[in-house]
Length: 336
Ligand code: COA
Image 1: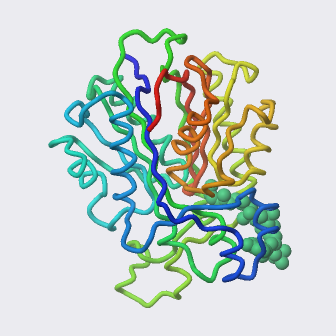
Image 2 (image 1 turned 45 degrees about the vertical axis):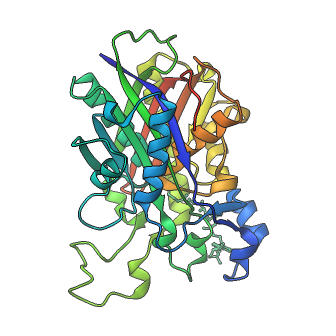
């Protein structure tokens, strides 16, 4: 048994936030933001909109794009760092709102690598014969966890959601469009403090003490994260290429985690893949963490960049630390 992508959906909350708007509120400038990150705009949900709302929109579109009805889905996996509540998971609520019935549904937390962790897990469920059609969603509302005073994070992250439908397939000829060919997952908890929300979990419960306000928000060591992102994504991508039997020259499209345009350029350079084969949409959506890879796929597909059968290499990196890569051939689908 093998797995293949048959549907793709995405959703951005309508509110678009420009560098100019943020520069009026923080000690930064549009020039600094664009030159250091490549980001020009990002979308933020309006207060009251939660991750599950964005996930349900993208999920419904992916199911429709795959030509399926909600009844056909037998598992939902939602990757997010910003669940609707600390408890319970957000996935069961999204499954219920999509009318999937009493299917298995759970969240995966691997920060910006979350979507590829979820995709690899969906693939494993299918290969094990446990599921036929899996809805894999990455959705985030980072606007709810960013410190309004912190210029080092506030300008970088955006909200959004993307989703793929992965289906069971008997015939896995690599030439058959949509086939998922290999995965690679890894972590290094020794560097967990590079990306963190210090308070609010069981280590420092907000009920047991009164943590400094900044410790309730997302924090990161930007420079160290930058170096680790390039190193870990390129190592993981090389492992997945070896498993697929591709060399870097075979890769038609490199879809890296949309953290920073300089990270994406450095990743292509480390892998010896021409920069023009790297998909980039961080300029318009910022870093959307677990939603980053499916949003990049959706936007590139909408622009007509992918042809069925094209060889696509996905690579992600995030807090944990975590990293992940997936190789697949592009399916013959219309994203919604
Ligand atoms: N506006 C103006 N100055 C800013 C700024 C902002 N928004 N944010 C940071 N700075 C300042 C810093 O305070 C620092 O000042 P100092 O030298 O006086 O201390 C200076 O700019 C340079 O900071 P540095 O961290 O070296 O910049 P950088 O070139 O590494 O770019 C990031 C900063 C955050 C854009 C970059 O490190 C990055 O993208 N890292 C990865 C982040 C990421 O994607 N994380 C998500 C996890 S996958």
